Length: 312
Image (cartoon, rainbow, N blue to C red; front, side, top):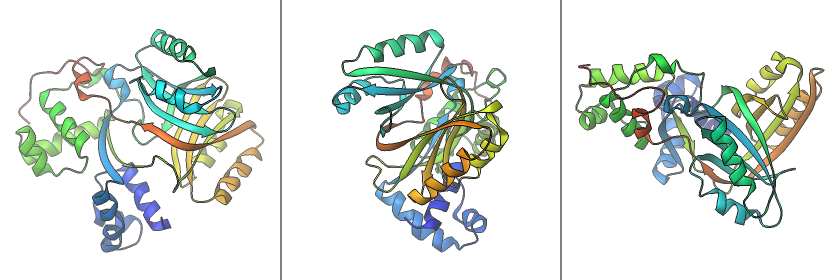
């Protein structure tokens, strides 16, 4: 994958509905160049654009990172973990631990029960838990939305459901499926996006990770130093970053073009006087990467019970 394609994907991760013309202007290229690189990825199914609701809107108040140490065959453990629907990420890694998972749950009691269940799986030697205190950068989990102030209705939910299937669906397509005018769909979608309760972005299909060097990085830094945060934000392949409660102060996921780029970023981080620890792990096999929860949860989630449909 060439550098321009990676940059285009970066734009689509941030805004899955960005037009080819807008992408071309941002990257100082042509619309035809964008289309030539992206259309084959869409056609082959290697790239999808989907909508996802923020977990907080669904009443999932706690998000956590689980580092799992395995005795014996990690694949047997993975098969057991795949039975847990609340795990939104399951990946086999190379490092001190063999599996990394992420979960969204309603409260700390539910997290405790889930961790106890995972620890009881045969072959698991240890589970280390990091609580996401604040997500700073992510495909589908942006700043905390003002959940209590947002009220969904049946039309909002119908729009989200359609966008979960195809995040680039036209306003005409949305209007046809939800029974609303084009302008009404546009106003509602803009409201959903601006509130932060819904995000739309591109997700590549990547199970064997042969075309990606995706590393996790765990850092301890005094007061979660702004200098450290900026160094990670400046990394072109930053996919995820959060402040955490646990053995690290900060966790990030970064997609690198080469091992040289990885080594340069890590070297720059460890040289910072604020950093006392910097550990890394390589994502070798992505088993599950799920950003969307069932939209039906909105009816009972923290975002509210569906209200009567409005006219617009």
